[in-house]
Length: 137
Image 1 (tube, rainbow, N blue to C red):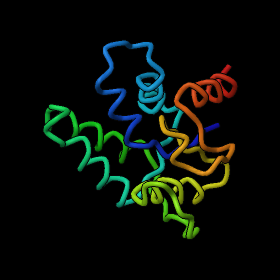
Image 2 (cartoon, helix red, strand yellow):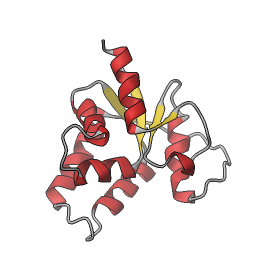
Image 3 (cartoon, rainbow, N blue to C red):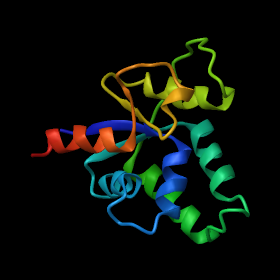
Image 4 (tube, helix red, strand yellow):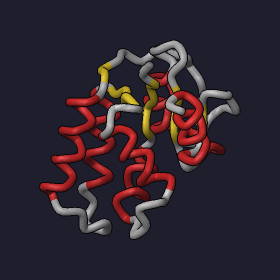
């Protein structure tokens, strides 16, 4: 049984910056790579990933950024976001929230829960791992 989730950009940044393989953000990405977690995306999300991960301050190699984006597209599922009219603290986050609503039972994995409405499907990386552990045990 596949589990679907929109992964907020901050989770990707934290995973790529982490020096600890047991970090929740790193583990979330590993679950994407092993097929337990199917990332949902749409063009606005991919553009945000590209923009943020390419920022000079992070110093991520372009090849690493492109490989990650390719992996998300190849292992993921494109969706069309559901327009909600929700007002979020950062309007750029709306695409992530609305994309998560496009598939029943999908999650939004973020390190910034306060940026989104308090919904059961908006979870931290650690909580996402707990969901996956419950599905795959």
